[in-house]
Image 1 (cartoon, rainbow, N blue to C red):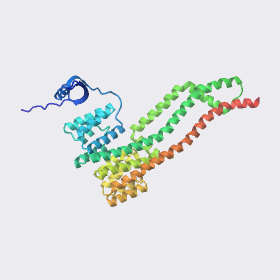
Image 2: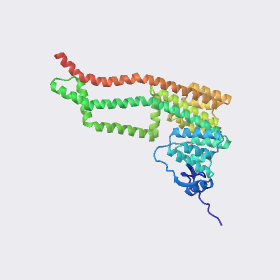
Image 3: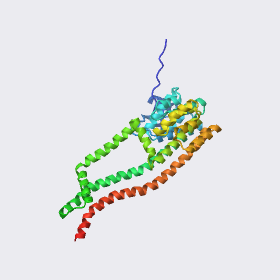
Image 4: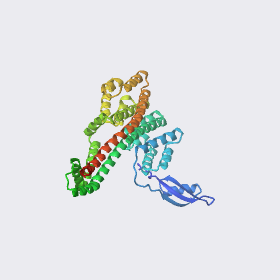
Length: 405
């Protein structure tokens, strides 16, 4: 007669308080399947239990890429130090300040504890662990070098996050300045210009064309300021959502961004750095080239590179060398093509692509620095022209009256 296997109770973290054999008050926390288990375990240790309470996870927060990178680095470090996998998960989960990360790691630990492979446990959370991450972990489990591949994954994620952060910092400054400039212009139009209008109306004289134009714009702002803000905010939101959800829109915008005169070169270099870094990491882990290219296109963060990678994968699968397939894509710089060719000839493709990634990551650093210094005078000129033009337009009637007097 078949018997149903008892389902293991869901474990949680319990905080406890009690007294030891010397009567000293002691406190701590324990991962267990229930309060009774905690009490029994503590009694076996000679502790008189006074209070056991399940630790409640606070809501809020989210699991970010930085959290996954920190977790990967900590897990790799502990496994290289010989700490067992389940214990490593416990240590990382307890040390996290983000409740969502703690819950995620506890869920993965529970799956692994019931016999699920680590890569399969990661695949249950595709929002946080992409195909590249899971494939590398699976390769590490199969080859018995999980700690080594986790270390490579940590390096890859740290470098990728560093590039993304540099791109964000380069774009944040001009966007913030434009927002502030719009707010300043709106305040001038809504509150300052009407005061000047009352003064000029009392003059009874003809006003210059620039002044009339600014006053007309002010009337529009005063009457329809709510519509202006709603229209601009709604347009930006609709544009970003369309960009995010529409694949044709993504392709058009990614092509346009790469052709921009100032930011295009920076975005191109960052895409090349991520593309070469991803392929180098996958190939070094022993993942076959054709299979590795599955994850490379999306990791570049640009639809143009994703399309090129699909074609490269098709060419490589039919016997074309990687370098020739990359040349046919007409996208990669000569330096990357030469490094790829040398790597294929010497059998050190992962090392050559890694060096190319290092080079373009340094290029991104220099591009961000030069972009920051270039944008400052450019923005000052734009702001000076807009606000200075408004000020001059409002003072022209005063100058005209002064000449008459």
